[in-house]
Image 1 (spheres, rainbow, N blue to C red):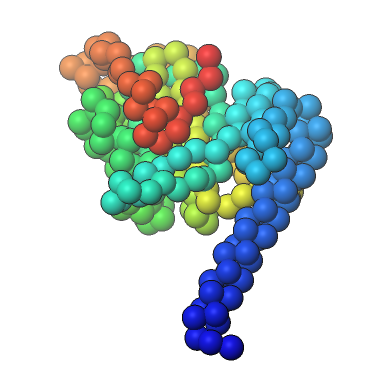
Image 2: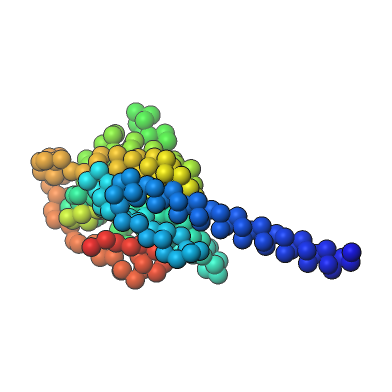
Length: 247
């Protein structure tokens, strides 16, 4: 056996093994997602033989979408394909705000949000707030009143999920919670566990009856005026990081 033949055989074996492993993971993901979709009565899309699946529908009263997102690498020469889960929030905030972790932080830098807020750690409860987490807003005083302990803790628990990138966007009448992960979520139990945690966070973020007025009353009068509307380029959200905002 010549050296060149051995190298050819080795490279071929590696490539073939990678192809079999990738195919196995895709088919396993398809099977798991289909089972979950049937259990939750969601719309499931196979998307072709060797393509990753997608699904969407209502889970515990929330509009949830599952799909594959694309993230550019730092060198901009290649892309990473991640599993993305989005939940549309029922309520928004009068102050546009973005909260992000991991690779989602880059999208926050493109938004017209120039004030950064960090939860206080005076009582020692915010020690788990990582410096890589970002909160950008139009009004720091508003965030101080809105982000109570329960909300901050639920956000931290979600962001601490292994290999998860999280972004939360607040608009005037709605909001969006999204998690991206390189994990294929190859069992219905794994899908359900993450969705349940995201729904828990979504519920904690919802504004209660009269809460907006309470926040406005607690804010300094100079900061309680109506904020300008935050505009986000749909092309940026769709092309650069794969956002699919539901109508």
